[in-house]
Image: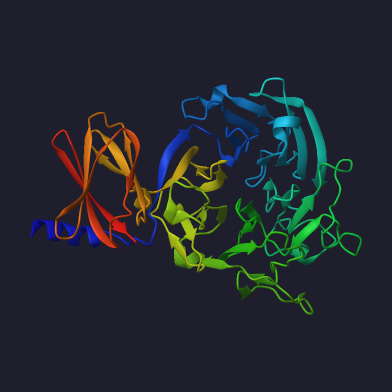
Length: 458
């Protein structure tokens, strides 16, 4: 009877199909982080709005950021505007060979600057004197600067530009194909001086600015590429009511994401939209009133291997509600619990697909984990994780900081032991191919302590 009650309690403890987002502290002590980037070696760089780039040289969280200043351009950036400063960092695909990386910042005049820098003879230090200005865009107002830049799967540099600011895009710049404001740009930094516009850009050689890739954006505060299929994901900050998520297949040029004609899926200002057709609607939106949000922070589609239930889902955040959002394949958004005091401003993706998020107010970088998928629980002075769950032919148990031997057994719903195995520290592989589809109970025992964990075999 007791075993049956335990099974019932575990069955009611949560959905097996949903993730449970949690944050794992990585490093704190940063000043207004605006970007997280990784070089090809997997080393993490934290961009600070005031003009500093901090390098986590050993990438294990033990370094003091003050001792790892990769670059300081604080004298070049706008420190007066809430939305200005050093906003984005992207490493050239051939960084290991050419040492180039690119910055997106607003200068002391408030204008957007795209600049190329080089690493110095020390891999831990940039050459501050190597700056080469690639592009400057005049900004009519202090807000809506965009700020994100990334190399796409095609090797070209993409730049997200806001509509120039104020409110409501008063000059309708996002729909004006002769200005770079309110657009996604695509340039070739490997050909031309200082760049060229690659073939395939929709306005190349015809009316409109050659650099434009897509139009109709208000303030794309972070975009990313799915590293598996090349999809472009754009989080576009809304005006007063809605935040939106846009997605486009790799190579989809000339899209119009709708602003200022539309805010999300709703009409906003149609006064100059007559004759414009072919708007690309967001794949998802959420309202301020419905969520307590006010400003979306774009993230990434999860492509890592550690958390199977997150695979293929778009992970993002909102600056105001301090929550992490997850968009699934049906374009349904689920929200995490509230992580107060953070005001999330940026995400980062490691070469292995791990995701990180940073809070402006907290100055803290976290690793995003799926507590439900990993099954992380305290046990025997350490912790353990079970994944994937549901499982098919294999399941893994990871023991962390558990020094004593651990005996594992799997019981069916009648309480019969159907599989036993001794587990070693670290990751142990368990063959579950012989188990039928259904719910099981995993029992872990070490030094007189016992822990039960729900396991589903599909």
